[in-house]
Length: 99
Image (cartoon, rainbow, N blue to C red):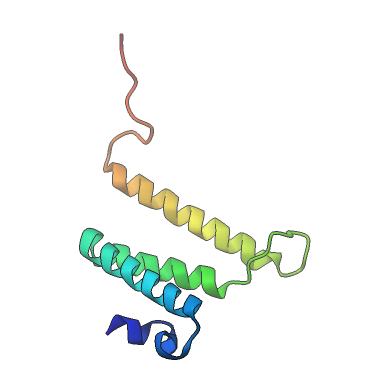
């Protein structure tokens, strides 16, 4: 059922690369959902939509580089917060060993 919904039905009418991408993304969604839960799946879909829809460029001197910079900053912030939240009160870089 997921395969028909993913990528606007290109699993039926698309080329082999569209079919491969739809199957790979569906497998990734299923594994993340079963292994890590709904929050991780929602985060995966959010990051996928942001990266897919934002105009990304490697040339930072062009006028459309601002969305690229904001997207990268937002994703780095999301990853940083996820790391901070995963530490649950412990020091961010571990404890100092006393010898």
